[in-house]
Length: 177
Image (cartoon, rainbow, N blue to C red; front, side, top):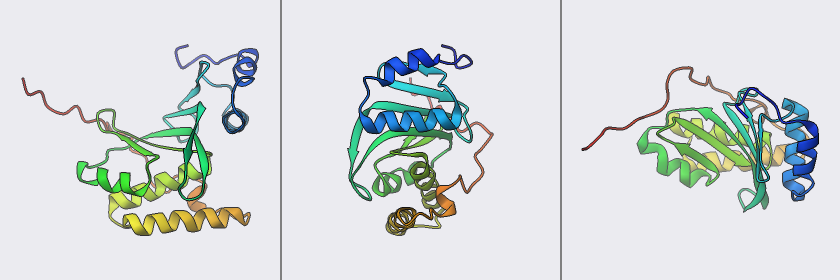
């Protein structure tokens, strides 16, 4: 599919019938919010330009993750974002599920749900901007998740709290030969 079409409901139902619980739940939640995906395979569903996202992918594979509490990473959401090279290590130390692609100029968060992805990307942006350290961002992440457990997720989990660049964010690097 070319990103304009959508997967039909019958195909989606067949694919999800083989998926594990957490992945299936994330796929269902995403379909309920953004509609049918633009692409589908036995291992992933993909939406393009849905909501604030450049791309959303739900994976059948459930990746165990212990931060801030045990869960499975199944939902990855991408934004255009240029991360300075000197911030890569800090972002890796903050959360191994915040991923940066320097060439494409993308940053993504992969977690169990969209609220956690908003949180991770908002805090990653604060690290890049220098307003939070890795330690303060990790503590803020835990505090926000604790608030969410009480039924009142903070605003930082509801939306991106910064402007996503409309400019080119990719870095092609330089040829050496």
